[in-house]
Each structure stands twice: as structure tokens, then as C-alpha cells.
Length: 158
Image (tube, rainbow, N blue to C red):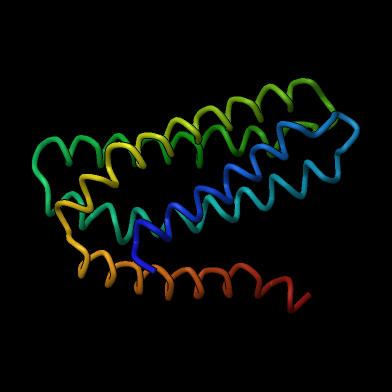
């Protein structure tokens, strides 16, 4: 699978989790906690794949416009990873505050996904070409398998 197809498949999974989270009720606390954990795992792995593999190749192959998009996308990741998601995780899942924060996470991530899919990914296809995207996709699949193994290792040992 090439890099862009792999990332788009991740986007579909993330959007599905976000939809389930936003449709959940204040009484579905366990479901909400589970969905937030799933979302965090997906986002953590996805962000690493983008920031360690695709984004550097995109920035290197492009010009000033790509460099600006690179930094904007990284900042959007930082906002979700460092601010918004930790706040959501720390919020009581039975409260209206949780529902509000979940909605903001959904809006931020959907905006980010849309920008990547309509602006960055089409540019990346032109700049990098099929062979490079295929090679990057292979790297991503290997890295993803490694990260998933690492994230699930503590669960196995417990």
C-alpha cells in the first residue's frame, strides 16, 4: 500500500471512532473511555508515521508552500496531541463538558484530515511520484507494525 492510501485508511478509522464518540451518550462512560483510548492509539501511530516518514519527504521535495504546510500540519498535530486530547482524557466521560470537548476534537481532526487529503496529499503525489510513495508506504507499514507491537506489549505482560 502506498503512503497516501495507508494514511487515508487511518483517516477513515479515526473518523469512525470520532463519530461513535460524538454519538455516545453521557451514560455510556465505559464506551467513551474505550473510544478515547482507541482514538489516542490511532492518532499516536498515525502522527508518528506522518511526522517521521511522509512529512519530511514532502518538505524536502517541495518549496516554500510545502514547507509552510509541513509546519502547519505539525502544529495541528501538537495541538491535538498535547492540548486537546489530554484535556478530553482528563474529563469525566459522564458530563456535558466531555461531549463538548469530544466535539472540538472531532472538528479539529476533521479539518486537519480535509487539508491533508485536499491539499497536501495531491501535492505529495505530484512531488514524490508513485515509486517513492510505494517505498514510503512500505516503511510506514513496518513502522506501524512495530508501534502496535510496542503499544500492546504491556497489555500482554499484565
